Image 1 (cartoon, helix red, strand yellow):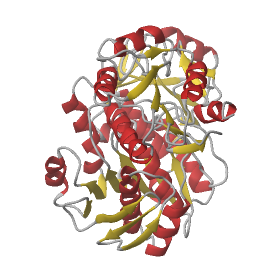
Image 2: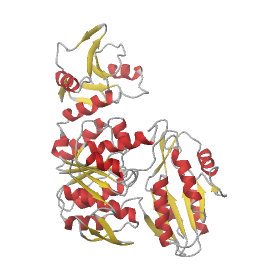
Image 3: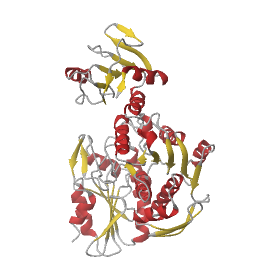
Image 4: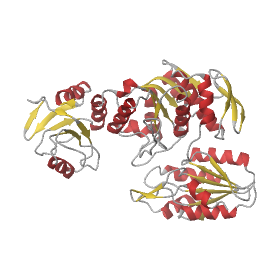
Length: 483
């Protein structure tokens, strides 16, 4: 619960309150002090006790009119819609939402140890490593692109990498009510771009890597903007863990020099050596031997980052070793074997950098014919298409089948043709993803061959025309055609 007076105080302290407008009346206070027992940005989820947030570029006056019919008495907005209820006018609606949600839900962020991961790739894998490490001796909740759990027992899929602030703090409060002690989060650059985590401080923040991604008309306009918003996690973390091998590391290192930090990588004390497919050794803070289920050096790096972050939160070396050994991630480097011995790799690799790393791992283990199933998303991350073409050109022996991958409002055939136009050799286009997978699996002959299905991972849907349409999932489809 929160009162109008508390709401105005919060906004004023953040220099975000402008005035209350009711008809032609402008005021900096209000004669009454109503209590709000619910907060919402969904006009279908309101009543007379709701404080409503009119947010979004596509927000319409009609939504407020519908909410008023349900009894709504106040709303927060950047503009006055001239309706028959008072408007609390703010300069930035997203910042207002975050700070008010914190107070409304009783500051759950202060009752949890918060660990956040950012990076172009690896956030989900690192979060899973951290979850399995911390659950050895603690009670962690996790907010992940792949799965979210607020009680350590039930898991559900999140629509956003980092939830909207009202949802985020509600989830935190639920985790606290469930007796959770820690919360592991993936924090995207978008979360800072649109202020979903405004005002939130993390106990530990980890920066895994950076490469061009999420650059486009509705995301980040430039790489500089993308990198800047990634670095905001470092500015809002009490202690940090950073990959010293990442691009532009010196910028991050300079930024975090004055706060507690752990660097890991080839030029640091925290290094990986004796790396094998399912085991590696570590020197430095976490010195010891580690078994791992996920193949690939990048997964070992993610495990090390998670281990260092959890160590800062009190995890023992024994917990770290056990947690890493137990970790598997749906849709991340899952491998099945066809009747002829050929391997099928399913991985969420959905940008140029992660695809390049996936191919390098597969090529290390499979020396025969390699068949890649690949698509690019619609209406976001347009730069990935050129990146995919560049990676394909760098692997001339790779057989490529382009297909659909969350085309949204774009034509998947057109997306595939855009990629193909930048590739220097013939390839196949089959926009029906299941048919593409089935066809690729008929082409393998020996145990040295492999099918690589990139992009969807464990997602059991395709985003088409703004809707989540049912899709069995890459792994399930591949299993269907094993024989």
